[in-house]
View: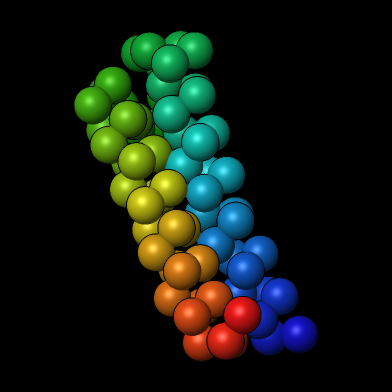
Length: 63
């Protein structure tokens, strides 16, 4: 059960990163990041962080 929660946490980070990139692309100057570069960079950081979090947690279990 704890592994499922960790996997969902990684997926939430990836989804939030995708949303940040999408919202920056859709409304370039009206994002909560206050600039386009921060929107894209923040989205990429969240996606990479989510992937690293998933990979780290999936290597704990020997699948």
